Length: 218
Image 1 (cartoon, rainbow, N blue to C red):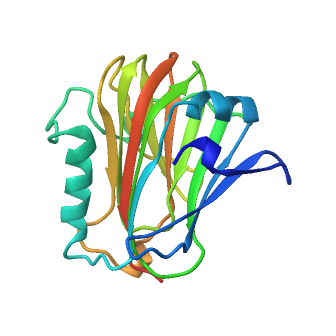
Image 2 (image 1 turned 90 degrees about the vertical axis):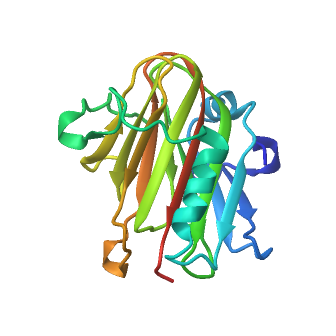
C-alpha cells in the first residue's frame, strides 16, 4: 500500500486514511497518517507498506510470528551491540517534536478482538530534525527496529503518548541498526499499553522501519 492508495481528508487538518484487512480478509482496522502535507509526501513518497494482522494469534504463537517478522526484514538478531537498546534513564532524550516537523502514523481496530500486528515501512525519506511516530493499538509487548540506508535515524519508545517518559531508546549512530522492545514474556490484560515508536532523523536519512506487537484484550 502506497500513500496514493489512501484517502486524503482536510477535516481538522490533513489526514490520510485507509482500511486494512487481516488474515481472514476482514477490514476491521484503520490506518491513519496525519501531519504537514508536504512532509508526509516527502517522507512517504517511495514507501510501500506491508502489513500482517492475525486476529487468531495466541500467546503460544506470537513469539514465532514476531521472530519470523524480524528475520524477514532485519535478518538474524544482531545480539549484544555497543550501541544497543538502552534503559530510558541512560538514554539522551531526543529533541522535542513540533507540529511542523512531525508525522503520526497510527493503526486502530474498528471491530474485532485481540490480535498480532506486523508493519513494515521501507524507504522512508526523513529531513534532518523531523520525526515519524508509529502507533499500534493496545498491546502487552512490542518491538521495533530501524534500518538506515543513509544518514542517522534514532529510535525511541514511549507508552500511551508521545510526551510520556521514555521506555527505551536506541541511538547507535550513523548507519547503525537500532531496535527497541518492551513487554513481559507472559501477557495479562492489565499489562497492556499503547506503544509510540519515534523515528527521529538526527541527520537527513533514508531508512526502513518495522514494528510488531501482540495484545490480548478485545
